[in-house]
Amino acid sequence: MSKITLFSSALLAAALMVGAPQTGFAAGEDTPPKTTNTTKKCKEGKVYDAQSKKCLAVESHNFSDDQLYLAAREMAYAGQYQNALHVLDSAQNQNDPRILNYRGFTNRKLGNHAVAMQFYKAALSIDPDYILARSYMGQGLLAHGDAIGARAQLAEIRTRGGRNTWSYTALALALRGVPSNY
Image (cartoon, rainbow, N blue to C red; front, top):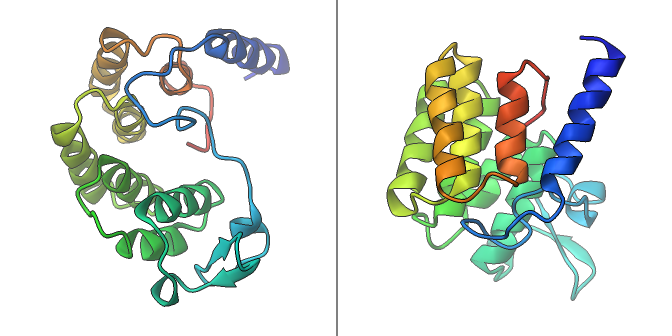
């Protein structure tokens, strides 16, 4: 792919995200996470605790599910898939669609396609409007040669009000052959 095409695709992605509605997903979730001390300073799946200013083992601290989810999400985007799964294991609500979605994401990145699809389906059975899970599922389907299934997820995202979101754009670009880390 030429540099001009990649630049045009990046410009399209940025244009589509401007003014994106914030429905069908957790606040701030429709963009890649910001890097924090959890991935900058912590090792071995530990999570940075802002209050104590230390990296703590998830088993030794009373992190909320929200904190664990955010840490696991950041780790997953940083390529720390095993660490992310370890953190997700500590979440109290294992049926939280966000937890299920990131179990899908990490398993997909680890090459466990069938397992990933099970987690995405579980997340979507609880929240059919969870467009980020649809985007990741579509990317997984596409990676395994199912462009029709990926297009169906893109159509679902659009139908559920996600047309001007990062989730939609990431899957649309993947369908156009633009490489992604997501």
